[in-house]
Length: 474
Image (cartoon, rainbow, N blue to C red; front, side, top):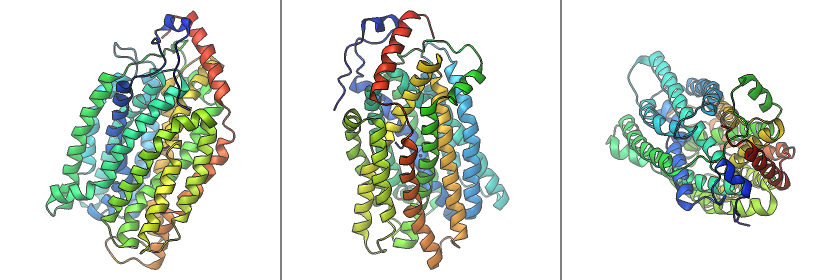
């Protein structure tokens, strides 16, 4: 799935902040930011394996028909969407000596790793059995992913109440995330060949064993190196219906949810199709790894500009510009011929650098929308805000992956064969024009996002005062 986030000094806390446990400065240490970021490295070991490689793994390795594979991915995502709000509601009401969200990162890491391996395992069960197995393991993997990633995403909103520090911590998060993506998009074919010794299925399985072990280690580091500080001004002992009702009165959150659906349809469609693009249109399958690596490096290079740009122009305006510029570059990917590799690489670099700031800003703005709910309606449900936002994004991811599988079938794609011109045109559209138009449309929705820099400063001041008056609130 990210995407999507002048340097803040953080400043000294106001005197009243001491009453509810804020640190002497809003500024987070490098150690804590890095520790938090490594959790998304762990998340991307699965997220990007699913996003970039699972569809072609199902069709070309596990030999499941493309339409069935696309349907599996859609069903599993809709199951995942149903789990997300449940995890968010439960984590909001969790009270432990480690906090609300950190325990899920600690105890969910091992199931997450095991299910990742099982999803890329290929038992010979006959076609019907293989489809059932693929659907079940993928759905369970997404359940484990939600149980870790919803609390993980929510954690950033309670590490600090300063919107620019949130942009900073999310900047670190996505530098680490895209470092994970760099590995997962650049090495799996090489690792699968090395570990498999000619057995592609075994190679994928052993690659996931490696990624799973690394994930457990990184999640443990995140748990140990982070701290929850922001406490809501009102406890959540009350109706879940009230929290859900408040969510749908929260205009900024609604806009971000719509943007999440549209942008993740784009990401899923393009990521799923890129392996087919290089295997069948370019004719050099292994080059997809270099393409992914260079694109990810472009993302990492551009991410440090997020916080200065947000400070100078505002979160919303940076996101709008990012959507329009990167969408135009993605559309341009349709034009080069299969021999014009340099042009293809340059366009991809420009597109990735243009949309990089939007990735951490999307999550920063979701945290701001949780503040907005508490400010306007007196109740804060951080986990629900993040889980409902990821619900929307995963809807987009499932729809995008499903559409990719269905369109491959509609364009007469045949696995491991010479493709017709119709199939090749369809593959090109899936990595260029269709996702580019979708991403540019996100700018239209963001026009209606109403939290600006003045409002974030006002919300922070008012909420700090409220929390001073309710020092015992949870």
